[in-house]
Image (cartoon, rainbow, N blue to C red; front, side, top):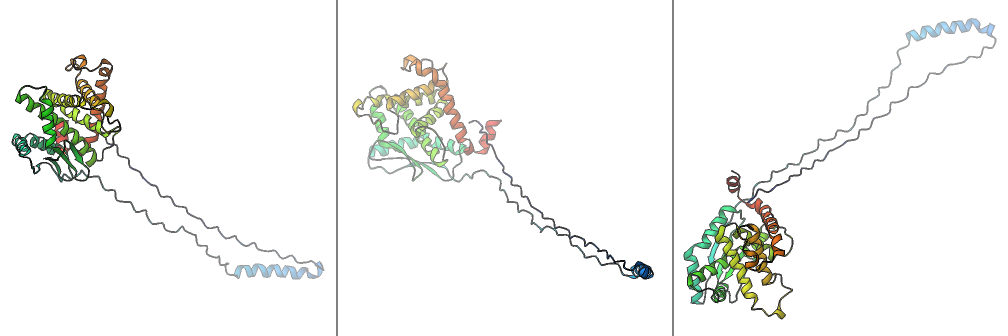
Length: 332
């Protein structure tokens, strides 16, 4: 799992204040008294006497009281309260992937579930997922009798259900092409692996609210192929077995009754998609897929890029939910 690039954006707000300054009062102007000099000669002595009296009064007069001008100050603005920014903490791991075996009415299915349980194969897968991923609540993976052939993920129960009838259907279809019982058991197991990781894709998209483009069914097929292709030759074989299952069952559908409206790609398309992606994971190793298995060259030249892009998508999408101790180990 590659390390995701997380960009953190911090937005700051600046507070500004306006300050009003008061106008200073104007000083009053002093007036000058003009005296008519009538009879200048007559009043000459009186004017001189008035001058002398004026100088004498000015010396004795108290200094004028200046009106105190108070500077107008801006109102106090309280300091802005900084909002406490809480650091984002890692998600708490509160749940586990759990394998559940439902009640069955058919003894044949009861025996099948017992075989699966005794093999501990899916318990081991659940243990690995519990080491890898953070869960907010338990995630059940249930094997049970459904009354119909299917495997599905429920949005309401947050649960993967694999029907016993589907495993029986795998066995029925592969029996026409496989001779030994051991090979048949291996084919059924491999096809079940592919379907399990496909349904896990639906589950992860839901519980982690992952954003994707295109049809969710195709994205789920991509996760299953990426996981299995990274598990070595046995994993790649399981992916191809899943593809073969789609190819085999495609012949059971009349060409005139294809559900073109369905959310799934047609079975033949799913077969070629999976074949292309496994080939794209290692073109040199799986070069015999081109031609031998019927993968056209026109598609094969695009497969490596397709695989790299979808692998990158799942790396980035899942990275925030990978446990920190696992990330540390991978980064060593």
